[in-house]
Length: 211
Length: 254
Image 1: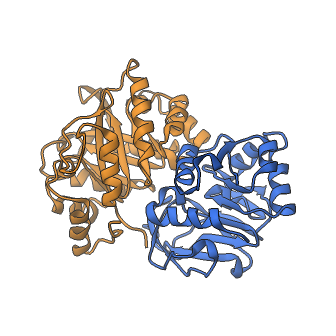
Image 2: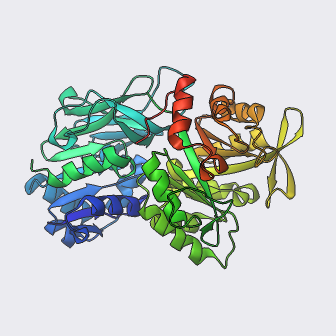
Image 3: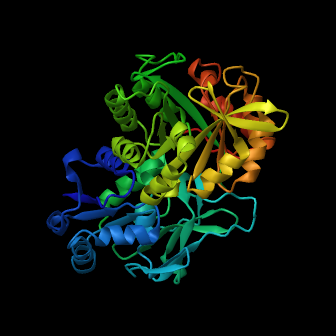
């Protein structure tokens, strides 16, 4: 049972690796890789991502065959997939950042837009611990209740076309998409690997998820 | 609703916590790993790890200590000290940091901040500013442990750093650091109000009211302290309870 954490030179990979190892049955079940052959054999995929949408999309594309392997795994073999932060945002149809339009995976219909808190004194990025709200009964959110805190760091969010794809929100001068999911795909705007007990619970649920 | 963060800071030298850490239940009071574990269990919102004697010779020690500390941290970890450029940022991220803090190097060459922010994203680039009062309402940046005057206005510098891509400002008042007299509130407010990104107040905390003031009067998004927590004067839970009582939204301790 291998979970592949995709390494495309983006962000705090070590953080993600150790929290997944902590919750895995065996630490060797977690593999950090950019090898399409490993992805092709993986039984779960985790795609982290920090920084700008376009850079992440381009970074992922720069590894020959990597995106195709992820697409084959998630769309044909339908294995569980988790996107974190920008890794979640890339699930959308479009990323609209700095006046640039970048195509996403289009697995969750919608676009990634700047967060625009109604209260102008709120800082951007939205950085820190925020309470989860409007939590659905998605199995990966099992045991996580409204008011539990997760760690966010972002300036953009995924505005999903279909409200049914949104599994949880947080309030930051208006609702911010915290979790999206559809079929075998789930994504979090927050960082489960940095969200202490709530995050570890989420990771454990993901590792046990059989969509 | 977003909560105000409480951030204990570990000052590390040669891989050991200095400034004395005094938890009762620590096996080794000088080991950053034990401290990180204790703060993680206590429900700290983030941890800051600053290598205060960052030299070329002890880089290996720093990475090793950072790596072992990060193993115990399921909360965000900021690492700083002697960070010179994008390569250092990458090494520290690989060691387990979630954010990396620039200090003197950003004063010498502000463009290294944009280079690192472009590569790794603004969210993981923190700029630490050490400021000293030069006259009433006028603060300047000092480098090299406060010995070198730069003549750079602290508020202007903070704005410049944000324009270069800093995702957060860690603001230390050198006048107050170690005094237990409280944060420099006018300085904290001037910078918090001048920039769009979160500001962490640092330097001078002696009691829990100081943490409250940092937010209510200093307009900081997060409050950092070292000795009040290290010496066990107050626990993270006590700090959170006190802030909540003052009407500041905090996350319940784990």
